[in-house]
Image (tube, rainbow, N blue to C red; front, side):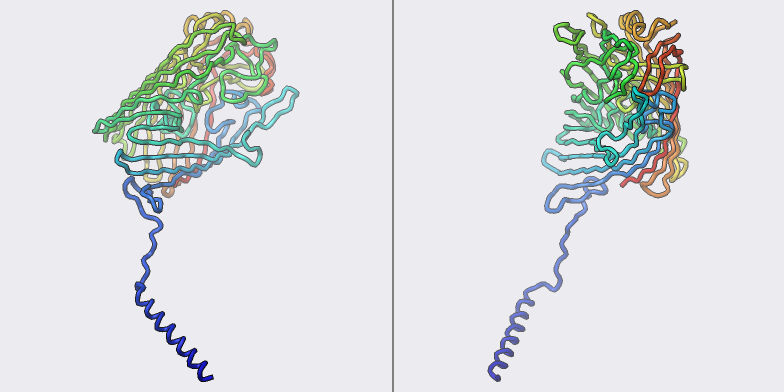
Length: 515
C-alpha cells in the first residue's frame, strides 16, 4: 500500500514538473488569427481573400417595384395586351429583384487584374393573353412558373492591361446609359446595353481625364431590331404567329400590318465601337461611333430564290454631363444626341418596348390605332437592302432639395425615317395588301416623344423610395383607316380603325436598399 502511494505521488510530481517545463515554452498570450484584412488599395469595402493578395468587394441591392397602368416593368404600353387599351391590359404589375455584385482586383507587374460579376434574381408578375377560342392564358414567369422566377447576368468581364473582355456596358453608351435622371427603362434617344454586352475592348488613358476606347461587341442579343422582308404577304386573315420585329414569342393573332417578316441571316461581323471621353471637375463629354453590319436572309423560303447583299450601317452619339451648376450642390444635367443609319438600336435602345413593334389602340371597341416599326433595314422582292435612318436625343436635370430629398425631370425624342424606295413598295404594295385601301396618306415614318418626372426620398443611407411618372406619344404619319383583322391576343375585332397618333402613361413606385 505504501509502495502504491509512493508511485502515485511520484507520478503526480513528475507530471507537474513536465507541465511546468512545457508551460515555460509557451507564450503568455496567443496571437489572434487575422481572418479578414482590409484592402485599402481600391477604395472602401475591399478585403483581402485570406491567404492571397487578391482583394474582393461584395455589393448589390434589393428592390421592389410596382408599375401602374402597364404590363411591363418599366417599358411602356406600346404593344400586345398593354397596347390594347381594354380589359386585357394590367392595371398594375409587380416585380421584386435581388442583385449581387462581386468585384476582385489583384496588383501585378502589368497593372491591376480585375474581374467583375453582377447577377440578378427577378420575380415579375404577368398578365393574361387571349386565345382564339375566347379564353385566356397566363403569360408570366416562363422560366419557373408560379413558384419560380428569372436569373439574369448583367455583367461578367475581365479587365487587364487596358483590355475589357466579356459582358460589360457598351462603350457606345454614355456613363449613365438610358438613365440620365430617370428609373424608367424605356427612354429613346441614345445607346443602351448598360447591363452589358459581350465585347473585346482596349482603353487607353492620356491623362487629365482624357481616354479613348476601341473594340468590337456582339450585335446579336441587343442590336438587331429587325431586317424586314417586305415581300412576305400576310395569310388570308392577315395574321401571323409572330409579330415582327419583337423579342420572344408574341401572341397568336397579331396583325402583320404589311411590314413583312424579320429576316436575318447569321451574324457575320461584330459591331465596331469607338469612344473618346473627357472627364473633368466641370463634368464629362463623350463622343461615340459604331459600325453595324446588316446581313439579310433570302427573298423566299429557299436559298435558290436569292437575296439582297449585306450593308454596313453606322451610328454616332455625343453625350454631355454638366456639374457644379448654380441650382445647388450635387445637381447635374445629362444630355445626349444620336444619329443612326442602319443601326437603329443605338438610338431606340434594347430596353424600351418601342424598340421593336408599336401597335397601340385608341381604346375599347373599333376606334383608332397607331403603329410604327423601327428596324435596321427593309427589302422588297428582288430589291436591295434599304437602311432605315433615325435621330434622337434625351436628357435630364436632377436637383437635390435636401440631403434626403431629390427629384429629376427628363425627356426624350426619336424620329424614324425610311428611304424613298422603301416607302414606294411599302405604300404601293405591302401595306395596302395587308390593311386595305383605306389610307388617305401612307407614310411609315414616325416619331416618339417622352417626358417624365420623379421624386426620391432617402430617409437613411442607401435606402431610397422613388415615385416616377412617364408620358409617351407615338406620332405616326399614316392617315385614313386601316382594316385590321381579328387580334385574338387582345380580343380586338376586325374592322376599320382610324389611323391616329396615340399616347400612353405609366407610373412606378420603387423601394430599393443598396449595400
